Length: 224
Image 1 (tube, rainbow, N blue to C red):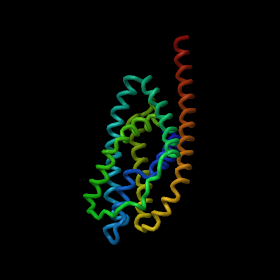
Image 2: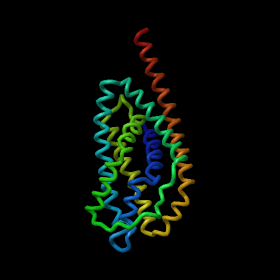
Image 3: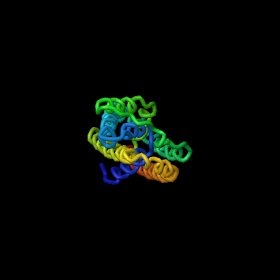
Image 4: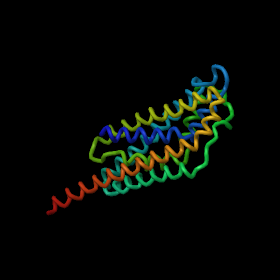
C-alpha cells in the first residue's frame, strides 16, 4: 500500500474520529467520574469495546468487498466513486450538522467489563456504521494488490486513529471543565475537518481518474 494512501487515510479517519459521535459520548461518560473509577482508567473499557467493534465491522466489510472485487470488478470501481462522493458528503454534513455537546454528558461509574460492553454495543448498533465502512474504505483499496493485507493495514490504522480521538476526549473529561472549552471549539474544528475531508475526496477522485484512464488504455491496447 503506497505511503501517500496511508497518510491520506490516517488524516481523513483522524478528522472523523476527532468529531464527537456516539462512541465519544459513551467514552466521556465513563471518564467523567472522580477518583480511580474515572479518567483514562474508566475510559479504557469503552475504548477497547469500540476498537473491537471496528475489527468486527472491518471483517464483515472485507469479506463482502473482496468477493465483490473478484466477481464484479466494474461494480467495485463504481463503489470507489461512491466512496469519494460519500467522503465529500461527510465533509459538507460537518458544516451543516449540529454540535454534540460533551459538557452535557452524565458520569457513568462502571467496571471495565461494563464499559467494554457499552462501547461495543454503541459502536455495533450505530446504523451509520455499515454505510461508513462500505463507502469509506473502497477508495483506499487497490483491487490489484493484496486485499487482506490492505484491509489489515487499514484496520490497524483505524485502531490508532480511534484510540487517539477517544483518548483525547477522555483526557478532557478527566478534567471536566475542559469539556466546555471543547464544545466552544467544535464549530471551528468542524470547518477544518470538513475542509480536510473534501480535500481528501478531491485527491481520491484524481487518483480514480488516473486509474480509470490507465485501465481504459490497457483495454484499448489489448483490443487494438
